[in-house]
Image (cartoon, rainbow, N blue to C red; front, side):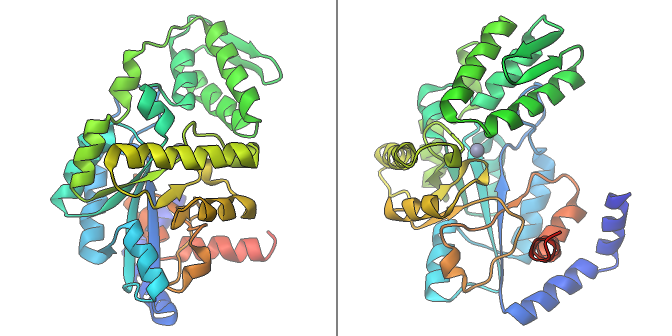
Length: 336
Ligand SMILES: [Zn+2]
């Protein structure tokens, strides 16, 4: 129903009209897009990828209608006040191998720069991300239910149950202190009696050779911490350790300076944004579907991003024209 309404609005040219009007008033409109995985759905348990054909359609549209710039260029442009009128930045979080296998050839085809934010611990150790470990265990156990201490009891009868359980557990763990989260994950893997094969890390995560090849061909790499904790749930000392060591690890492997940082889950506060600035980064990104203005210099350590894992192109256009972000801002400001 909502999708049909959005489709009709796009067909009527409302999004193009709104985007043009908004640009006339603000003189500039910047969209930063956040992708995670790109490629065919292969396993059912790990984070859902955006089909490569849809990704191709996104980048084709963006390259024809926007000026795609790298995140480091955008930071410079914001500082110098010379952001192009329709600037868009493409980013990826985490460091999945399909970024190399499926997204990279498409980005090359359209000569589109992009930034990939790496969680360096899993990449270095070829170890699945914590949310993928949970889902792998849930999808490969013989148990039909699971009861986790202080987390709750869940059904695991069918794949739908498992997917929902995985999402519920992940949401609860995101709010938890980092050490407690690790304990729960260990407990879950133990209870499900599932052995997570070591080779899976190699299969799902970027290797340094792939990262280097992408980096030689227009792809920047930023930091996404070492262990991917929600930074608002850890001490400032631990956050500092994550920021310094992930930056150092990428710089040592690539021999180039790491300028940008992405907050895991998009969660940050003013103490964290100051810490990112003081650790030597030039910008950091969160996740909030808002357009930025060209004079966003005071936003450099809390740049908004649009989650672009969107199959329906009409919805993506709703975000890209700025209408979706404006609706959000309006309701937030009015206390709805
Ligand atoms: Zn992430």
